[in-house]
Length: 245
Image 1 (cartoon, one colour):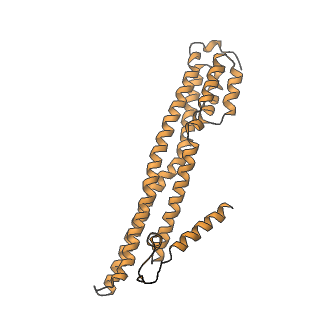
Image 2 (image 1 turned 45 degrees about the horizontal axis):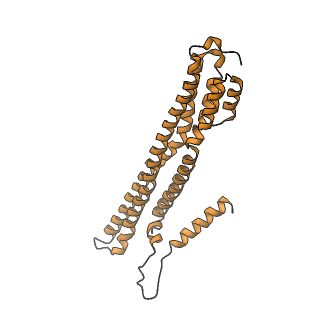
């Protein structure tokens, strides 16, 4: 089953859940829980609710992807650190450079850029390590910012729905001369509360995931930089004796 087919199927199921649930002997006002949270009498309210649902799904998918991609084994694999340390200790510089180049993790790319300056001495390696670390860390943090954006925009969209719903409710109140049918007011108030609810549903997990994943990236990139710094430390006093590669 293709991804598009799955999305259509899920949307169809959710839409079917929004239909009212009637049973014999029950009052006509009985509605399903799904309809309560996924439906609005107003087209604008309905669009806001489904926009927030899409944002929630996007936030969840992005969180799962980032949590998977930014694991320790993906960014700073211990096996590579041990292999590079062993090769450098044995002064097998060509093999160490090759091992770093074939590894696409943060540690591998940082080590490759640093060891590429081996002929130019410890100072050049240190500068290359710092510059490369800044560039790689920035690239890792950029996708996480989408969670921050979703977490900050969602409450604003929910607030927009809240204001819109209250405006609708007050318009009903004015149009009936101050004696509205409670059912008429319920639609606007429901839209106001449901959009606020979904705005918070999107924002809270997105901002929590943003903080946790960002902290993890900061910690792992700092750890990777420390690993590479330890690798090149022996060359600090022996830079003039490093053979050409």
